[in-house]
Amino acid sequence: LGTHGGHSFYKFPTVEALSKVSEEELRALGMGYRAKFIVKTAAILLDKGGRGWLMGLRELPHMEAREALEELHGVGSKVADCVCLFSLDKHQAIPVDTHVWQITVRDFDPSLGKVKSITPTVYQRVGDLHRGRYGDYAGWAHTILFAADLVRFKERTDEALRSRSEGGSPAKKAKTTPA
Image 1 (cartoon, rainbow, N blue to C red):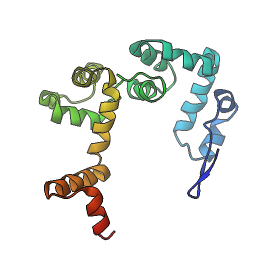
Image 2 (tube, helix red, strand yellow; image 1 turned 90 degrees about the horizontal axis):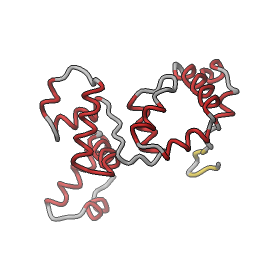
Image 3 (cartoon, rainbow, N blue to C red; image 1 turned 120 degrees about the vertical axis):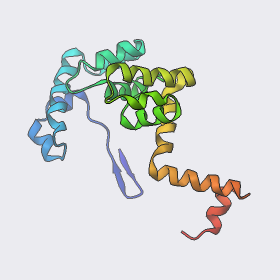
Image 4 (cartoon, rainbow, N blue to C red; image 1 turned 180 degrees about the vertical axis):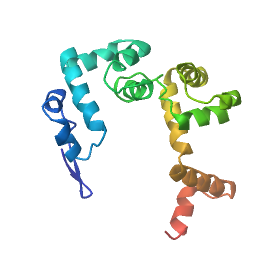
């Protein structure tokens, strides 16, 4: 596509292009264990109709789209919900992993801290809690909560909050504080 800031940017390959690449070629490109999933999924996608099938998922309700994606090799609920949220306009999709589960235990329902794993029932409960609080755009609210909880963002957020409580603004503080 081009370069910016010394970095090259590329288009994501089409399903047809991916279907012509071998597992060995993908491994040589650094895809590791994911190579076999990519090869198998590209073949399944082609059989289902490729890009047209994927775009058709936008017309389905969230749960139907997620279930259709879970038919692909190696795709579970979390990856399917990531695709639903970030590519299929399913704003209520909540991709649940251990990090999101921990946020949910802390901020929504401490009793979930007693579970030993994220079963389908727990996965659904976590998503329902977010959807119940944030409504139709719960997936995007979840994304903000997720990012804000990451260490590299949390440090910035904590610094900004400290600055505000001291009467300054983060922008002013940034100008006066050496890097």
